[in-house]
Image (cartoon, rainbow, N blue to C red; front, side, top):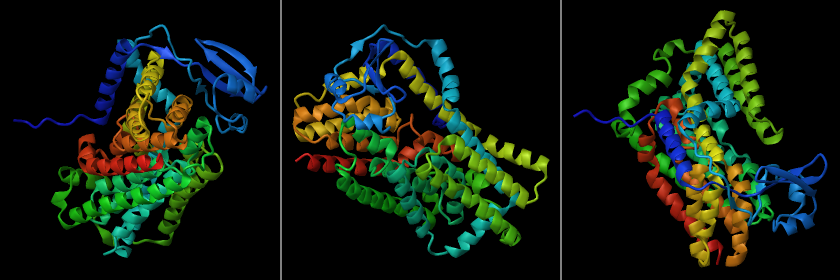
Length: 497
């Protein structure tokens, strides 16, 4: 009997999109009124049932709306998206998403996610130019020689650095840039591609889960909850150290097993295919690291360093990041003396290699669009917030942890979840008698844990770059997810007593 093959990432997301479209026929449509600060005339704009009204932007207005958030969180730009107004949920006219809306959702998603998609394509183009020069292959061979017998250092450094990026400035979508670069390095170190994926994706996920200064998670959530983002900081730092250490040990254990016996690899059946994609050249004698190739590698590496500096310090986003990679590719073309026609072909071929990833990102965004257009996100939020009434402290905060697990399937954006849910969820802390930082932590840990396996998040796009199936990722990571979830629940319980 022929073995049933697990569907591709694109198919999984289309099935999820169809499921969400069906839900819009079952779940009642509803909306919270929203509040947006208008900096130009220092007013609040309230949107209710499609109608917009302006009120003075002062603390009295916030108090009247039962929004327990300091005014300065709006005026200083900390909260720049519309937030939900508590106790304003109302059912609205249903807008179920039919077959044509379902068909159009991936297209709309690709258009809406075009900034991320172009970043991915420009990364692919840069990789294509690097492959043409041979510098990447020469650098990998050199690094393999340097790390011989100490390859585990690569796992520790990569995971730690990416986790630090996640916890400090929200290193998430940007990690897609590092996958095609690091996979050949891990393969050259006699590991498998799953180790490379794990170091980057788990590092980012754990870092974001235990956010310390991440503006797209802990800071915006704390602002929306009406507390200072430093409240509860020490606990998150401790949990960051624990979870990062556990993740590294988990990866090291698997990596050692694969290194000793390649047949133990979860993706052993794809070994030849993946090494053909990322394994580099086999003739090591032709890979001398010349001065020109060193300069090319320096330009290549500098592109990523500049990107990180720009995102963390200069408020850069996808347009600027893509521009850095484009300039990097052009500079490498000049140094390598690549002919114009060869440059265009190599850049286009490299971008084409990641086109499948671009479609995954677009289809995932389309799922969110179906929910938004079907007006069921607020209904899900309203009903889940009602589930926690009358619970004890420990049960309440852990219930909230699982609620955020579920909500993140529908709202995978950390900043989007914060501004939508915090004004609704954070006042619940007052009724239970716990600090609002516990709500922020439940949001962080709940979204972070589920984000490791959330098909509407970044994992399918990440796996798509290496053409690894979602089923194999689940097989690899599920024990770690359980361990991290239990540790998070213990920390949440301790924090409220």
